[in-house]
Amino acid sequence: MKMFLSRALMMLVLAVTLSACSDQRELIHLNGATMGTYYSIKLIKQEGLPSADELQAEIDRRLELVNDQMSTYRKHSELSQFNQHRSSEPFPVSADTAKVVKEALRLSKMTDGALDVTVGPIVNLWSFGPEARPERTPTDAELLSAAKKSALST
Image (cartoon, rainbow, N blue to C red):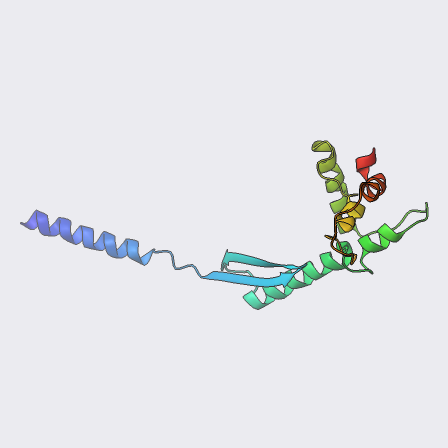
């Protein structure tokens, strides 16, 4: 009986010890809207991490910066300005935009052109882009003309 009580006490101490070590981590859930869609981020609160409000503000700031640099829906974004650039002179862009374009070109090469960053004229023709167009099926001539403006023609 003494051995049974000793084992029972040891099991009780072990159970209390393990329950004291239970995972009491706080989950932070951040969400917002940007670029015509929504985002949701879940993370475990850690010591040294900024507050949820500070994280939310920084995420929103960074997404707004990306939108200002690379949106085809904003006429004054770097990407929109680049797309309107008709000179043969170099067009300066931010390091972020240059990095994204470089990666897109790498992926395009890796996928044998499945990723085509020059497909904008075709996207617009089908009424999926930023340019307002009537919703109708493009003619073969319109598609051919748009394809000539993209890498699909090469």
